[in-house]
Image (tube, rainbow, N blue to C red; front, side):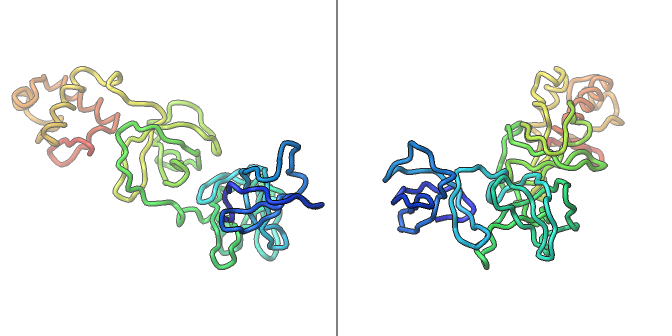
Length: 275
């Protein structure tokens, strides 16, 4: 039986306080009366969320928490005590965020980006606002413009931070913000690039070849074959025409188009395709 997760459990028996459920290893947990429905019968398999109550007993619920195990969500701080802070995660017993798991002291009534994990020492579900330590290093080989789920986070000088697919840290650059977004929003986005530091650059809209001029398409196709070209906007016009078959003006427009879409990088004396 997995604490802090959904479990498919079998109804063993009904009692005055609720129904006892069991997993395949015969571990039992109580589903209190308030969560029982008239259509629940002996030997039925029910999907429930299991966590520990205020007396540290495992208990099942049919309520849905606002955050998944190992995931991230903005949760409202409801109380602060000498043990830590408590946040509303959609269940009867509020989620504790210990002081050691707070990057800043939580204040009642405010919302904080929170990570949910299982404390293996206590077997309790715990929250943390020190989220940076819990983001996974992205090793997935996303195809360009793969659709991903985004949780909108705080704004920085570069753009807006996001949580990608509920596990990776990402960023939408200011130039790629094409519509109003608010902290806490759940929206779809598209992968622009996976960085060497394991974070992901994302866009709100697909780039697509429909947003690239014909000359930019030709230049991109050449770069896909050659990977890089020893040309810049300061290169000799005859050299540009010989290498890419474009006028210098057309070449500069194509480079600007591809660079705006973050499909190429500009280096010292060359342009390269983003791998």
